[in-house]
Length: 137
Ligand code: ATP
Image (cartoon, rainbow, N blue to C red; front, side):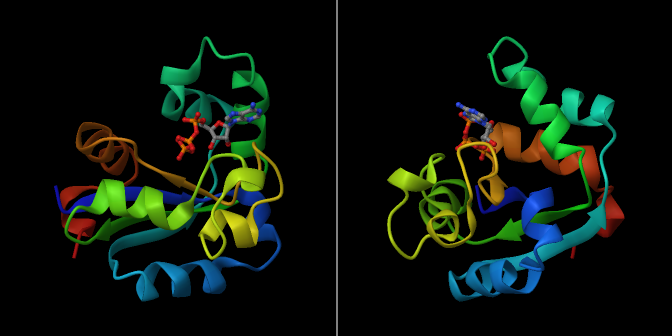
């Protein structure tokens, strides 16, 4: 697939890192197809992260993701899902390769600056969660 879904997480938005993160996305070869700043309710965050509902950090994750505004994005590039996960780096910033978005902007395993879809199927589901068909250019 040539599209993936991303979110800039609340702590990174609150710290004024939207521009810095978008710059790394564009320099990484991704075109912005759709973008909006919005805030999730705890219930919406719970729905978005439903696949993680059995994980021990689920409550903390939903609270963190609804704590402030986020930026939701659809990004386009050949091999988008895999290449974007390479660009953002490991979940734990201590393990993220130098130069990756998380190595620069993540604060912890939970507050790790950005989300990136883990499959083409989830990219489509997550994109539809935030954007309608006529918001994708
Ligand atoms: P994402 O799906 O957001 O791109 P990921 O695939 O790197 O991240 P997952 O294991 O799917 O990581 O976890 C989803 C999100 O849950 C992480 O991005 C992080 O914010 C949070 N998370 C993961 N592990 C922990 C943990 N041990 N403690 C707190 N939060 C965590």
